[in-house]
Image (cartoon, rainbow, N blue to C red):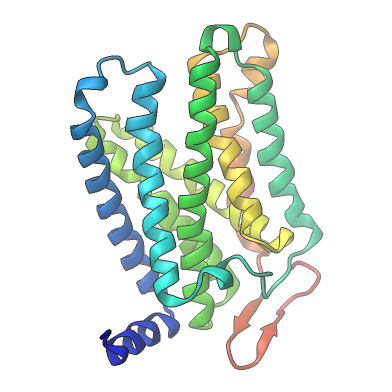
Length: 276
């Protein structure tokens, strides 16, 4: 028979929340995700001879991140949080937060419009779109789902929720150094992912449901990867490739205006209903 006492203690531990638990969860997730990815690529090594093939993308990116997403779902089920994570948000957002949605979505559309689809081929486009869906689900469920939820349960102000969830999201990408990525490139990626993380937090606030940052994130990675690898000719391509800078700038500025607090006992407390 299952140990109900242990199960209750497990749930109570996480229900008390805390920013440091979000960090621990992210570290554990990343470790298991990396181990799962190594196991998958090791098993599929004979099929991974061409790093540009759709098969390589599936085994190197899609399946490992899908495995990570599955781990998060199982963890949510162990706590009974799956419905809670995707329920209506307990705090809304100001109209200005829509800027984050428009900014990210606008540049995603520009990038998708400036891809040389003939050169990329249907197979690569399809698997990158699939990869984007799993990336968006796993990374947003972890950071804008679990980390945000854990911090709100501990009563942290929303500015702290935004910054920590974005910082955890950014830190997950530091592991790219282990894959041989240059230090400067990684540092710029960490800055971008922090700004992007703030934009995803604002998307969560203003749309009211985790599904929307997941979908917005799901359209971001494929647009960046495909447009970088297969850029179409034309001046619009150059404009689309500059999309990271506005996200960084807006994300950093937006922190100043984030307000609010969610408490477990008192419900919602809005510190500044105008700024959100």
